[in-house]
Each structure stands twice: as C-alpha cells, then as structure tokens.
Amino acid sequence: MEIQIKQNLCPADAQALFNVASYLEKGSGLVRDFKTAMDLYQIAAELGNVSALNNIGWMHLNGMGVKKDCVAAMHYFEEAVDKKNTKAMVNLGNLYENLLSASVPKDLKKAVYYYRMAAQNGDSDGAFDLATMYHYGKGVRKNYKKAGILFSQLTEDGYVPALFYMGLYLENGLCFEKNTAAAMQFYELGAAQNDSLCMLQLGAMYANGIGVDIDEKKALTWYRKAARNGDSLAFVNIGWYYEKGISVKQDYRKAREWYQKGAAVGEPYAMTNLGGLYEEGLGVRQDLKKAQEWYAKAKERSTRE
Image 1 (tube, rainbow, N blue to C red):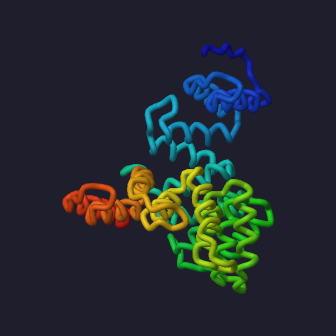
Image 2 (cartoon, rainbow, N blue to C red):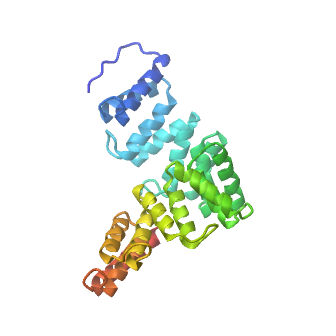
Image 3 (cartoon, rainbow, N blue to C red):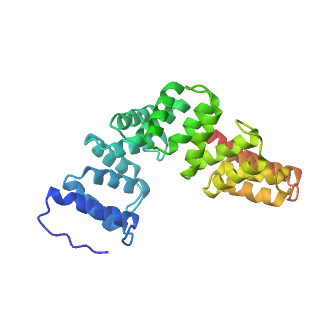
C-alpha cells in the first residue's frame, strides 16, 4: 500500500497519522500493512506522538514489518517511558519479567519497578501486573494484602482479569474474610465476560463442592466453556473426565485427544497424563518408552516455568 504524505506536516497532524498507522497495523477497516504502518508511526513519533514510539517498539518486539529486535524495542519503550507513556512502562515490565532475548536479561525487580510506575500513573494493566507480582512473589516478597487491595480496586474499575483473583482471594480467605458465595459471584461475573480462568474455577467449585453441592455435569460444562477459550488446564480436566468416566461414558481415545490438545500448548499436566495412558496401555498400545518421554517433557516444562 502506498500512501502519499504531504509536506509541511505539523504536530497537530500526528494523531491522524497515528490513527491510520494503527488501522494498518491491526487490519481494521484497511488491508493490514505493517511496513506502511511503521512508516506512519515513525512520522507521527517525529511530530511528537508518544504513543507512536510505544507502537514502534511493539512492532520491533514482535517482528511486524521489521526484523524482530528486542533491543530496538526496548530503546523505543524507554524513549516513550521518558515521555510518561504508561503502555510503554507495562511493555518494559513485560520484557524484564519474561526472558524474550539473551540481549534483554530477565530482571524481576525491574519488571516490578516499571509495573509500579505504570500503576502510579493510573494504568490498569500496570496495576494488574504489579498485583500478580505481589501474589506470586516475583521480584518482591509475596504479599497477599498488597495484591488483594490492587485486585479489589481493579474490579471496582471493571477490569475483568482481576475478577478471577478476587474470587480466588475470597474463596481461600487471602487478604479478605473467606466467603465462597461471594467468590462464586466474582467467578460468574468474569465468566459472563468470557474470562476462561473464571470458567475453569467455577468448574472446580462444582467438581469439589466448594460453596455448592457437587455437580460433575455442571463442572464439565464449565470446563468445556473454558476449553473453547483455549484454557490448557480445561483440556486436562476434560480428558480426566473421559479417562475416568465422570459424568460421561469412559473413553480413553477421547481422553488422549484432550490431553494431546493440552500437551500441544505446553501444559505439563497433560503431558503427565499422556504418559500415564501409555504406561498403562489405556486407549493406546502400551509403550513404556513413550510414557517416559512424556514424563520427561512434563518435568522439563514444569522446571522451566
């Protein structure tokens, strides 16, 4: 796609250029064209559009229209952070939290630093990422109170991913008084907004009789809904139901199919259960070598995570 850019552009034109670049990047109303999007972002950035700097970094990070380059991405994110762009703060935090390149070493403390900076500047994604760092004790000492306060504030602001954690905290009495009925309400709110973790947890509550009577059919229904959203643990749970014949006819072949779906996306529990099928010869020809291979893959994946 070739776009003619008039000369003598001024800063007032930067937002319009950014908007067109964004449409081209996402293929929203226009044919997706990463190269032209990058060119327009560059011009918008030169005219002072800070969001364009962040988006240029994002395109370098993901190899969109340019060669994937984490160092270049970091450069643009840092430049945008200097100009108070909160999305760039979150992106830098993500870079440091997740080792994406040997040239950008993992640094959880720096990740926390940038998430906190974004949160303090009112960014919900930054606040959520900071809360999860406190929840899991990554880069900071585990602190359910600080995490819970952040999750609570985010749910009040309508931030959907926080609904799962509020449910989890109420279900287990973390930071707040234990209240399984309230936990279920949060899970149901999240499920209604297509949050797969909330769907998965609703399944677990029905499967284990937490705050409700045990109902394996309802549990399986929720696991299937989570699976439609691609949740890897839902694949495992559905496979387990078929393996054991829980609320469905026992079917080792279907169990294996569901475990294979989970294994394909790196779920270690799915790999372990596949190993079990091969070890016992359930729905497959018994093969101890394959069983050990799956167990080894599961161990390697768990260690990496």
